[in-house]
Length: 536
Image 1 (cartoon, rainbow, N blue to C red):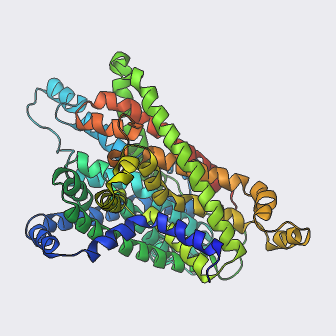
Image 2 (cartoon, rainbow, N blue to C red):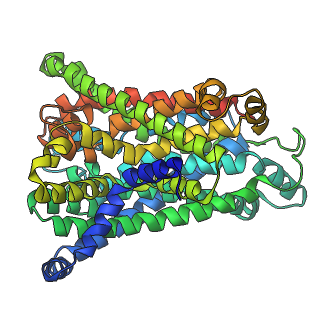
């Protein structure tokens, strides 16, 4: 017979996996009408969605590799003035939501933007002078310079411990620099590059703000169009299933690459400090290193921030200051509630895994960790399908009201997506608590939840605060789920920035967008400090 603890864990796992379960349940109701909708989509929009999504993913994947790998290689294997500063400056684009970067570039580079207006006035030119920003290539540019830190971080971690030593050994054996990079550094970093690229591509597939604003017909945009414009739950569920299949494939590839990362840090003992010294650069090589490290920071953070500051400096009176604090309050309230609940759920799951690491607990942890990879579009469809079924079956329950007119459905969607973030931080905190402390506490009579409250909780305070911070920031930036599930008159900073940009009020959109960037800087500062404090 299952115990109460097992039933509770299964119930929690079911709540966090409801989007996947809801979409799977839809396929159990397959009928002739559903088949007809799928055939119509296959003959009309589906090839376009698939081709555009694959093209966007392939080009963005190549972009994040081209930007992130050279930066990671330069700050780990070479030495040049400013290298220590670039180690953390290259993390700054993590604070920029991709849709905010898209708004900033569009405002500055579009036909009526300040750059083309100045060029036409200054040189007597006419017509469009720059390529259209709102295009597939524009989206690739945005994704490349906002998501490359995934590749940069993992590649830097894989290279930091052993690349300088192995490249020095190759130099002593007579290998030139090009061969050392090609045959030592890049093979060492290949699993990390694959894992980071897979993470970036999951963000690309889950994005709605950039593809919707740029008018790109991807799977994510198609899901919302089918649900909101066509009012077809069947089409939305079918598109969400295909999108989920692509994301699960990327997740499998990422996990497989992560398992291969172990070889980068294993093997013989670490070489001496003299042998591990990075290669010094001077002259044109130093200038090239500066350019390759400065360009990602410039295009991914500095220029978008400057573009958004321009309308703020031009006329402060047009900015919606009166409603800004209401939007910020809604965002902070939802973020705080979700962070508290997410950390609590993560503590329960991590404690259960430590206390009884059985097959059921491991399965629940894997299911809970899946949520972060599920795109917001899939979460929305997977939550609203069972809600619609309940509303149609038992109208007296008012399921539609509770999940769309209150914050219940929105917080639930946030938890589905971001409990995995809190769980990873809490589990890393538990990994630093020796099992002998548990044995000693049980010997003194502190068992069960008393052990968690009196022994684990004080030791997990730092990990819990980090988890709460990460969940809070993710909730502040979340757009797709918030756009559909938010209650009436409960707009958040992310939703307002998207709506103002969609209405071509990019100057007003700068204020909530910059607020999101400032919030996003918090985990970036924390991460940069943690990386600088950690030993190589």
